[in-house]
Image (cartoon, rainbow, N blue to C red):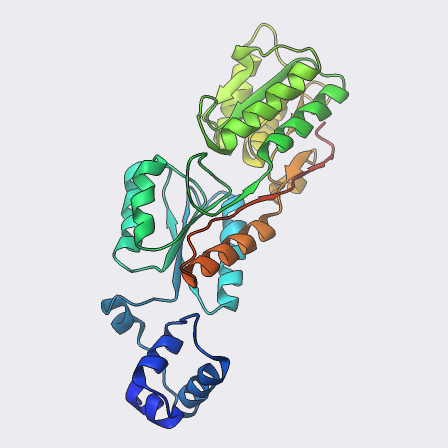
Length: 330
């Protein structure tokens, strides 16, 4: 079995140079890199990732933390991340936090223990002052989430605009009684705060006030959507439209509405968020806010790899656009 010494001898370079090429060191001349790669190819030499990990070197592995992989949005996002990482010869490990702070810390410790070279966090459960110390062990990129005071690369969407154009669409359709679902209405940071602001801005511009009993917090799933619809059915004064935080919630609302003879959109207009496949499967087809999931994943990987290959501590914030897709549910 060929060794790193064999590669060094055939390439005519030192073992240290060969090691730097294997570990993707950024400051290696192209000619030397090509000589090492050619020698590895001729010898059939394959680096041992376990040995490299024990030496505290790189693993060519990226970790991705998602809240729930059963949510199609995160399934498609991880797919995009994996494909982009593969182009740069990185493998991806996916971790599911289930919105649990302790699980998130467990996964962050994988960075500390050098089991991954960097992390992409698509949701955040702990405060930044808890997460920040882990950046000493490797880069962390925040994807589809952010904290105002974090010093980390961020790839995010214009969440405020998404909620604003969705709510305004309902207002333009003549609705004045608009319910709203959110992950966390009282969040100090992140996308929920931005969406809440966009919702409120659209109402304020139209001279409408917020009805607190039409605000539903901590909603995420199809089952949550069904529960929301049941709550609205029990109200003396019902909203005529609802802006949900995801297509899953919207689907649950529509399913429960149809079970109870509520017509969509005649009796209740429904708008989702994400543009998941379910948006075109549900009947009637769902009006929603489309997010560029592929670009979100690609940009996150680009940011992470750039940070892993550079000692530059600067961090970028990239904001991607969203768009309204009008279908039959409004």
